[in-house]
Length: 340
Image (cartoon, rainbow, N blue to C red; front, side, top):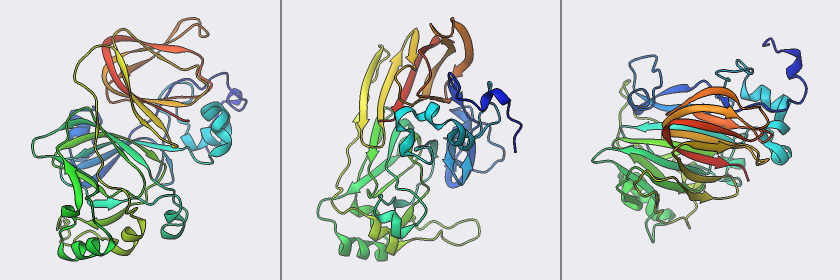
């Protein structure tokens, strides 16, 4: 076990804003944009598709990157300081409620679906449901997002399309633009690719069922596995075309609500000199899309300076964090997720 200072075993006045070490995942559909655009260190020459920034999932437990809690896992913090992290919501969650990622869809993700809370109990016992939202950071010419069934598509038509390799024809699609936000309720059929860089907030789950994988062959010469029966069982057939919410281009200071659901609320935030945070008795996460600055803890912290903030970082602000701000050197553009 980790050597943990004795004073951390009592309820802290504040855990402080927390940043975790990224967990980089090679993916057949990935590329190099996580390094080139977001400053991640890609350890090999493979294509990387995901950077897990905040995770309490069994696949990876995030580790605090800096500060007094450096080296602690999010799992340890949940076990010992859940109320400080989540506030009044602490009693509702054994596992940290969200998994925060960046995705580089240079190639095409499979056409897939994630189960909801009812379906996952039988289709993938032990996993969680997976409602998620994507925010498009960058989109290359020829890229596309698929989200929601076209009108009239039902189980029989989808089964026939899976056999014929024409699943994509059953799914609504659009050309993405930077600033698009796509809300995908669990049970929604979706895919993305052709050069799209995304930030993602989702429920803590890794449950995915593939309907179609673009006739792709892996380096071993074999296609990736599909999950036709489980995918059909996980689809909510009422979930039709999904249209993006679009953040207008421009650099004026503003806040725009993007998603409000039972799992999270998400808003776009743009600030020029100071970005406020903390003191709301609810846990929230700041995904830094652009800008730089430094945390300052005030007034409760006496105005002391905290760690540096940079584009490509994700900060977890615990529910018990007193009011603090980011003093900006470069205007900040970010996503702020709040736990209801």
